[in-house]
View 1 (cartoon, each protein chain N blue to C red):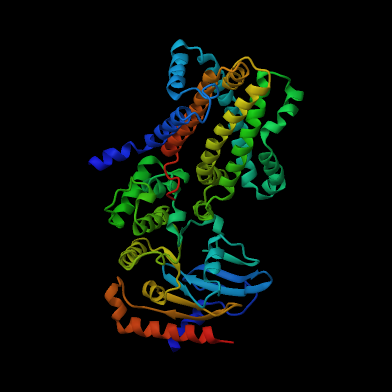
View 2 (cartoon, helix red, strand yellow):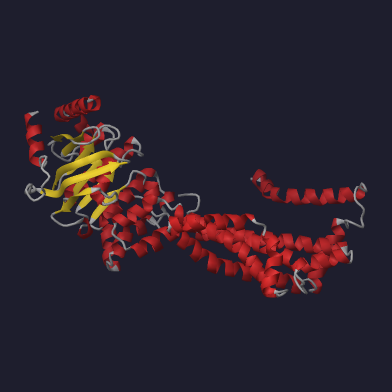
Length: 277
Length: 254
């Protein structure tokens, strides 16, 4: 318990308004300062501060309506904050390559081009040469051990295959930060296990910083190096729980005492926040 | 296998039943042969018209007018619809006008168009393209407006330019709905061309042929022209359906 709280103090800038006076920790990749967002007059976030560590997987978890996805979408630039600053290594989003995996893979892929062309699309639009595009897609296909035909159209693939293509497309440009919005919620258990494995491998291979929003506690804990627990709105950080179980974690890891302990602790904090007045 | 083969002939059951009923109505003397010639004779007449080539100039005139009107409708309607659809404010501000004129039967505007264009070929094409254009326009606009937001966000995340977001995603997204519009529009263009050929002093066209035959009580020729008009509409629709299936392969699947 003690370590968890220490960690959270290290990771978050305290309740200071001044950005300049709260320098980021050395291992911080994404720094969020003074973030505010209100919906229909009701504040969701006000003066919210957070550092996301480089090369780690952070899961965002919290009560319904606390704005897990809103937080991620503000970092990814899909939702405009009312106030605040979000920097990636001191750069703005405009100068940063990011990837995003949507919950609804069916609506995220372009059905008018093949799976292969979907993966190649961001590369071509970044003006990469044809041979390099081919090499990069082949590299990703090898990393994900693709055994289905990438020359098929997305609607000809299974749900798990489509989500795999989405992840490959998001990784294609070698993003610095990759966001995943409930990537498993529409998948069956078998595909969830497969994609969990592949995400860990991809993360290990590329060192990309990952942010995952999950509404499933087990998914949230399983992949995470840090579990960011949020309170009910107006949303603050309840706790940042570190989870240091060595990788690669397999399905059996869910029986590991450390996993059980962290999950139980996370659940306890979640319950406390859910029932908070 | 046998059952499969039998199923292939199901689509001809309807037409055969209609011909049988047609013949029955005459044999039972429900309708006078003066008003409705026997189906066999009508079809023989139809074959004769094509063999002698007598109907071809009129058929050609109608096809040309319909396709010209349709082409104008597409050239104006698609870009305008896409432009309006990509700005919701712009579409909302003209939505009433589009819906109003779309609900107004274009044939009601024929006298108005006669005042502007006179009794010319251009008039027929103008009124027909006007009616068809409204259908193309609002379908294209809806296609763009109802584009899946997730795909647009995906392109945005990749950092592609606004122009490419529009061209690669919005436009492609709208194509399925646009094609629905094109198919209804070509049918509408044909309807208005036929009406215009009947009532705007015309020397050619299937509409002209139908009304002429009716005036001189040449019922065989009248039914023959009606059948040809129907077949033309059917084939135009079928053609577009085939193109759509080939081009918009993802339609209804994603």
